[in-house]
Length: 78
Image 1 (tube, rainbow, N blue to C red):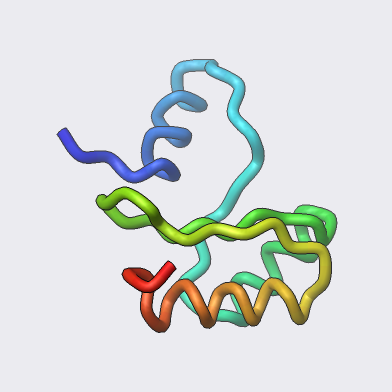
Image 2 (tube, helix red, strand yellow):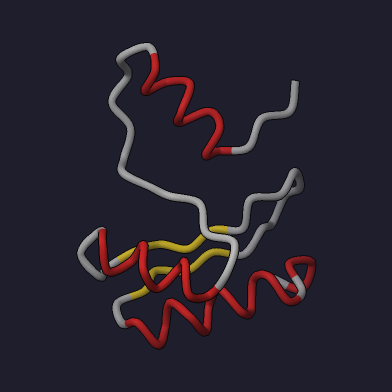
């Protein structure tokens, strides 16, 4: 069975396992809104079934948008 990390976290949470807060964004605007909602300091991770996915620790709104663009434009290059 192939399950994305966000799907596994939702399943764990459903059964009472504590998981870090997180959301799925489909656009840079959604990524910025989620980062703001979670307090501004976030990690953006591409959700693909492959090794070596891109990810990054972000502090500012502009970093969040830039990382989202980089990860969604060409995830294979990360």
